[in-house]
Image 1 (cartoon, one colour):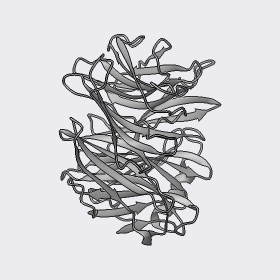
Image 2: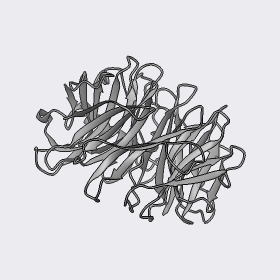
Image 3: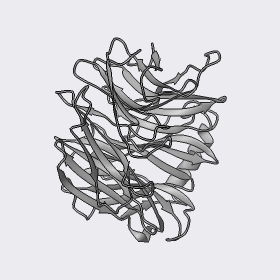
Image 4: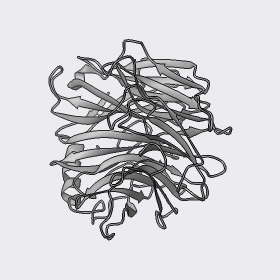
Length: 416
């Protein structure tokens, strides 16, 4: 097991990047070396929060984040080349807009033929927000859909006809607070249809839905999340499948042991199945949980992973995201607490774990990467060259900064 923490070259690099980026809306004025592995920081304001990551058709990377700039919350897109070097950045609403509303976006997808679609919320009006752009993040079409139930768009997917499917929530509703809608690609001002589904007694702004949605050839929609199993203190991981414009789901499965306290983190397509990552919460040692499910809702495997106790981990662990490796295995991204076991965490680091595609309990490798600042993982993808790119939020001197980090297929950054 390899570990890069505290007084290590990576920690020194974190300090250097911090010195270069504070007060900038791009990574730095210094052109970084073009390397197949890298660590980049992007600072747009003082409260940046990473949300989603995509590889673009030109092998570049696209970051979705939310920032708080001059008291206005804005969604931002950051486009980089394959080496993590910024090519452009766009803000929604624009920086020069007079009396702008506050926007936040949580889910994003590539549109057929180029361009992007984002969903989130118009915080000012309490409305569902849909933004579509061209491939350069320009010519945005912004719709705040007050007529659509569910004010917070969480995930978006596009079908073969180019129509958008959106999962949204109404955080103040006690039940039936998940909404699935279809919007025509030429008119996102109002939905073609909307259906509502229950989410237990969840009433907070964090309903526990990953920002992923999948649509098959028959327009069936698949998504996941967290459901309460009997009481607010007993959450469980969830997998849902719904046909288009029907009042009932095809299935709504609560995964895991009935007594387990599990919170969903992310879901991905895995061949003709789906893979989920979450956290089994414990009073002593949290466990990263990985499950593989068929399209019909049958469980292929369910495995929990404890991070090695020799790494000075407090037991606080969050399963953030996962990606399919080139060899068919899975690479897991987690956030782990650092400090004496059983004590409050002094800071948090990124943890990468490679497992095989059968859910074997013994990881292929584990890497803990971080410095003396707080690192919070959000998303991981496998790029076309077989490497893995991590998106997260790093707190540098109480300033939240977007981190983009690429490791090789074995989770390493050569030279560090």
